[in-house]
Length: 240
Length: 240
Image (cartoon, rainbow over all chains, first blue to last red; front, side):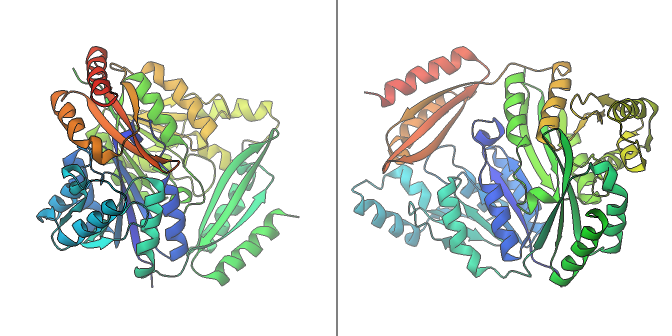
């Protein structure tokens, strides 16, 4: 029984030009790992309609869930919603329930729900709204694609809104052992250990500290007893 | 005359599980922008042979350059080199020049060039070595794919090794104006400005500070005079 899978699609020129450092990928990776959903692929594309459509179709067809980040605000460069609709050949237009959420929010804050802000009420046919407790403008789920804001606080709040409704699998468990020897010295026995525990993922992440080489060995898997057993053998190999 | 394009392929379970926060994407984005090479797409895939081959072929065919990050160390989970070779149907084996670099490095540091470390001298047929001034083990360029280490200091040093040899275009220039009004208030005129300057990319990045809404408007382009002109009009629109 394997876990549900997920991909992330980050949309935004500002990430690719280096102006902004993406923060949502790391947050989502941690949240999904905890929920027992395996994040298998991430793509970052520019604010380009065809790039969004192509990536959405590819990822939606390959994984249980797709999470998108960015491009659902009120300005001309916010083109995510219409291109997610296009990826599934759906129409998109201002929807009454989304409009009501925005109307209520702007009434309370004394701002006008003008034409630009109304863009944020455009929802593809057949989509379900995702609650945005920070700034009201909703995300949406269409088929298996969850369309979320790019601003990190809002992205995180939207993830909190939908994650409980998604069926997770066994959480990915991990244990870590720091070994103060160079990777080249431990690689042989480590490879044999990885061969023996084929259902686990055993990773080696080298570091250099105060001029000495070392490596963090991380053992990951969904079966806690197997992770324990492999970690015991690892410790016996390298800590005498 | 348009700029050369680039994609990045990040390889590593540790990024997708959230154990490690990728730092190389942001560094590469900034370095390429400065060099006049447009980073158009990034993909992150797991330590999976087929995922690496598929992504390498797709990105290599679509862009001028591909930069990979991760998976070229001495341990069993370092599978990048052999799968880049496979993506181009090349053989891979220990190469004399790469072996000599490692031999020299380990002789000087009093360590043994064992079987595991020798894995790092495996280079696909026809590849060019990339200098690694930090820890010796070289990266390589095969066709239009530059294969680099995942450890950030080494990744950055390797980028410094190859970037001067790549032909860049006009650097991407950008100017920024912080506007203390909500995105919804400025979206209309901003969209008209973007329509007028179609060769520029005009992005709006909202923020909330001390309870007030604002947005950073970033104007990017390769033509400095056009960026100046658009920025002048932008300032006139919103700073009265």
